[in-house]
Image (cartoon, rainbow, N blue to C red; front, side, top):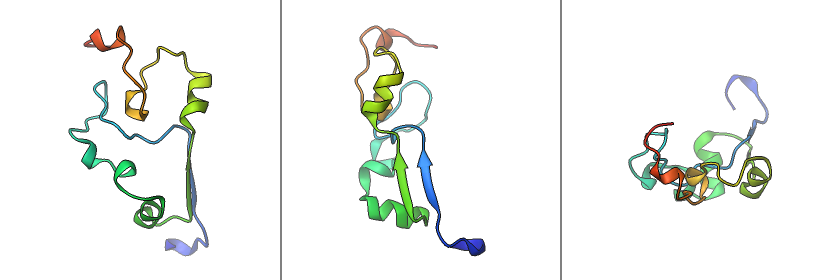
Length: 87
């Protein structure tokens, strides 16, 4: 590891982004995303870290209302939300 770190453990307080996001993240294609296109080992090697953990999608559902927009994390677009053009 650079700068003398023995280990680097990354913890991200959201699920990984695995889909395109039509309301804020400019991702033209799913192929541009790291997580759905690489194995866990490939991702930690790419990031040069010891470990990587995300918030589980089901845990996210426990704290956010069911109608919250979560398509980029693998959820479905609520029919009411899909009609919005601006937040």
